[in-house]
Length: 423
Image (cartoon, helix red, strand yellow):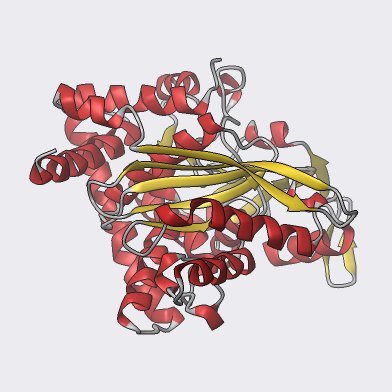
């Protein structure tokens, strides 16, 4: 299976390991997770029937600190996907140098088909199934695709009941009322925005003349698009799972208006509406495939993995790709993009703002502090900027692409921790 995400992750690992001459025993350690957990979660449905949902938690490596990683609720969630995401979390935490390892969780489910009660029962069931392996110093889950602060609140409450005491640092991405961090909701998108700001300086682009297309209009896609628009970039195309909208004049559009329209109509249509005024002449409906192949300066895949493949990479026209989704580019596509000299800022750097602010939340919960939003975003800025500069420097020094440079830097840090522990 060419687009198996775990195979893609292992290809990336081996490529970077070769560049830095990683010791064979460390490579062997990183080729497999520390622990794979899977079970069926029974949920009594509203119609009285009982349904079993397949659930996973993969704890990949904890040499640098407690396991850390999100939980996704998605129909396509499976073990290979969760293993790949857990591995990428190990790399991501090392890239931004926060003291966590990597893990990931998932449930194979279409969450939109569940009632609120069923969703809560499923969320609490996941915690009960894996509780003995979780905790502030063991494994700290967070939100991912189709999970959110509400779900994290339920999970944190359930963990407290199982553990016999409230432990807010056991989960991050919680509601503010339960110890969540200010700025967490926008953190991933904000981190991506900071990376774009650093990138255009390297590429000598003028932000007022820089066009952007964003595929994926959930939390991450919305915030990165909004922050780029507010900073003066022309966001000319946006899409979600049902399709997208294109500004034919390249003037750009306000993502807040598009989100408002999406909430009212249930989709991103071919008309752009600002308040009561809608423009259907200068905007048109486009598909996700069309968005990926548009002639823009910056392409931002912010949905799911494997959207840029060997089949469509040759038709990508963007000057640069900033990966806000996890694993959106296959290794085969990576090679094509390298040959086309398209700069790819990898997911393990571009979307690391989320785990960085999750780390801030964990610190606040452990110390009993509560930081203001401005303080959180101020702390995030140098971490993202310095990480970008480090990876850009490795890329130039070793004459390698940014993804391989990010993996090389991360692997050096992970290897140091493994050696220091005497593993």
